Image (cartoon, rainbow, N blue to C red; front, side, top):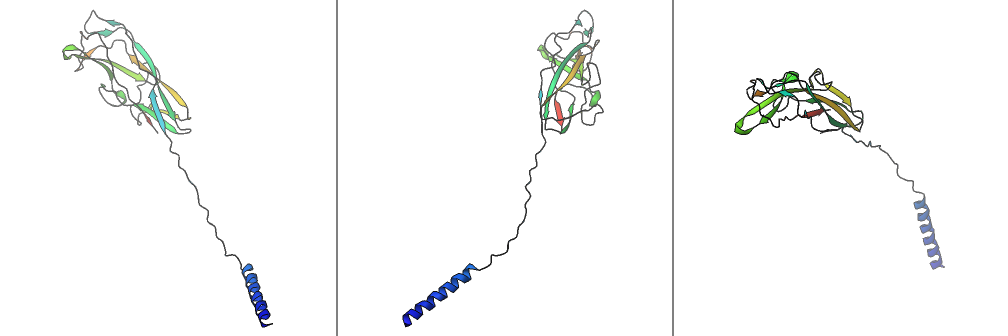
Length: 194
């Protein structure tokens, strides 16, 4: 009987403990929200749509100095791609062989020939039309070109002109009657500011 009573007592204690464990309350909970952020930087890319080529314009060769007898015009494009809704500005600093500074700088094509002879031919570019307002050379230019990105490539046309009456010059800017036949070139650099 004693053994039976002891077993019954043990079972009662175990059952009581089990019941107690089953009724323990859960611990309290707290929450904290965390913001997820991503900053997408606007960006632009620019490339050339092709060379600005004046071809072989008409020039007088029977007088001094060598002179263009008519306007020689050419067009080309630059291709700008900017993030949607991103404002941008385009300019072209005075080119490699330009004389002067700012928007009034005179751009020049230059040719290098045998014997060290160097000749240049004045020209200018415009975003408006051949012979129009000079292309802006900085973001402070009054004629700065402005646009807004679309995410797609945008084509911007520019116009070049060698004006009628322009004359070939030597490396010192003096009029020159004996500028040689051959290739004359310059380098334009377009900048997209955004």
